[in-house]
Image (cartoon, rainbow, N blue to C red; front, side, top):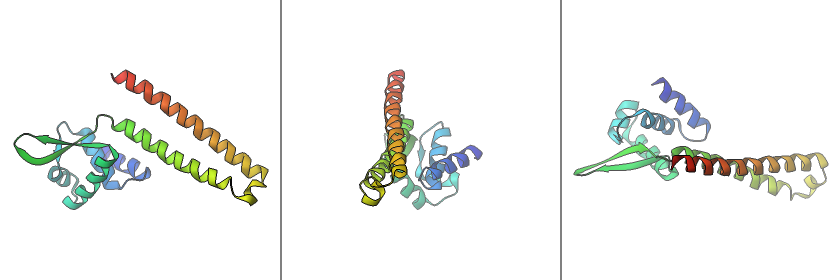
Length: 146
């Protein structure tokens, strides 16, 4: 459970709810797909909370739904490419910052400050390097997994 709580705190720092992070942690250490009821019982949270957070994890691509023939219950696993999705989401957060910086560069009174414009340009350069490096790393990772 300690590892699950550490995963929860990590994902909470990344913008997810703590419960979503706990679900990710639980799914990562589980040998088998888990139902919502199993997740709720293990984490001692409500079924509604599991349902809400599971929708977020499914939409983000971090978790996947699995079905069992003859069983109407839905089961969940960590998506095989969950780490790639986490990297992509980190890139999306950085690109959001890039958009804000670019807007700031259009503000007339900020354009007058050489120091501010230098900061903006350095940030944009770092963001571009991050984007390029992440794209290279993801391509390398995909080729290793095949």
